[in-house]
Image (cartoon, rainbow, N blue to C red; front, side, top):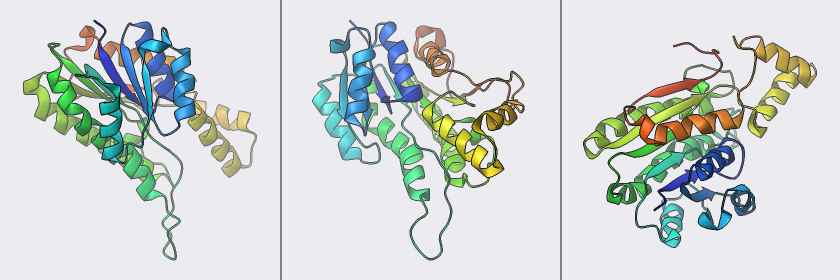
Length: 255
């Protein structure tokens, strides 16, 4: 019988790659995200699309998660990959409400918390010896970037959440870890590069060269590389990992 895994933010980028790699490894997936069309596009790329489900769901809303899990008909879950997140800059506006701090933190941090809490009863029912939770954090959990206070804080907050849950759930053999990608070739990264280029008044190609000059291996990762590492963590090969912040960044940060 196939093991069932929830993947949030599965419509694009790293989330889509995670779904594709897990499907190739014979997991049954419940794909969650705000954009139903993007989720369905992901599902259609998977091995045996009909073996997987997708539900439009805002992780900021626990009721959305609850309804989606109920609609899936799942009795239990083997693993949860809390990947849903948004990026971009935020600026405090003393004269209005334009600052997007709340949206970023509510999605990246509180949304991940909501996801795990709604999935926990299903994880606890699964008969597998070790069940898994993986948070997708970021290298910016370890670094400060001007203008990205919400993103940096939300991704750093995931590490505290991960460690607390790892301690709390170890006795039930639910293993909790976080993956911290650096530059990954996604639409979000390309938007970040364009913003970098605009700030420097240079072409995007030059911004890429300058950004990669700070990375020892001089390259971005591909989404599939992150996905393959996530698959390793949730497989039996990852049964000795819990409470770990695992860096995947081509040497850009060496804690």
